Image (cartoon, rainbow, N blue to C red; front, side, top):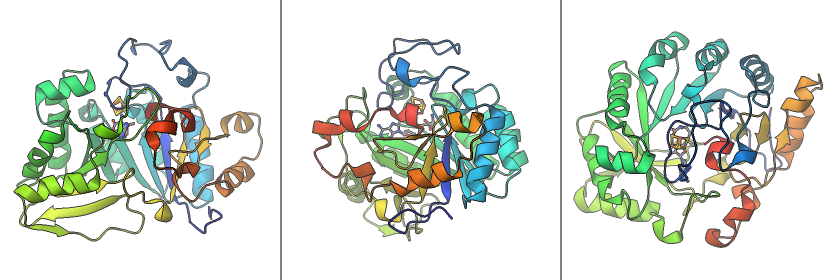
Length: 339
Ligand code: SAM
Ligand code: SF4
């Protein structure tokens, strides 16, 4: 079992398939001045984008995931960057599909239609799609891509195919906070689960305290228009606080990483695209598993060693003045870590 020094059992691994993306979301990778069309791309975070040789191969992902599973991992989520832009994404999903674990994915939704058969084949359990606006123009402004229709259609495709779809919406004050209630209206007749995410600081994403909309802010806005809210029960390791407007088919939740961190129930581990283990999204250090794995070393003690160093909260960043220290405490962008 993967237990840390606070007795938290870790059975959930998030694997980043790539630190690259075909979108340019303002809050994730705001600088647009690079081309992602080839693997030789060189971007502003050049020290954080992997080359093909640095990246775990499909076979390495499969075997390293197998080791984590032997140690007690029961759920794997594929993420990135955008996991579905990897040329061998289908192969990776199929390989991981053979394990007796709950397999899930977080995607920007652009290529879902091209992968839906693979999702069906492996029995993917849950699909999280990022969608920060229900307005095509604003979607374009927020993501840098004019692809609202494609993503929206792909969400409809997933719903029609029977998937439990969670839609991730990062709420930024002054950018898309005016759309919060539009998302709630969507849940009226559609069994979609909206997750409003508090905007988190990462290098280069221009986070400012005044751009943050907290759980409380978001709930107040919703309650003004929909007073008949009911709080739903949260599962043990849930990072989201679930609610429903009475009578609506869908539900919503707020991920309150900034205002009310949920570290005490944390069961998550992360593996970056270049094979580094991180025991927290906000961890200031990471453990290289890929290099020793490639040279035939047993990585199990390294996995346990890294977990033993996990802090109680927020990777040890206990100060609440994020704006003062966040650039020092994070060495990687969200894309570099794997959100
Ligand atoms: N490309 C995929 C996607 O967009 O869903 C997967 C990777 S993305 C980094 C994972 C999630 O992190 C997305 O839902 C995205 O909205 C969220 N995210 C990225 N940067 C964030 C930030 N600064 N604060 C809060 N959430 C963020
Ligand atoms: Fe890409 Fe996802 Fe980051 Fe947007 S949030 S830039 S889609 S990795």
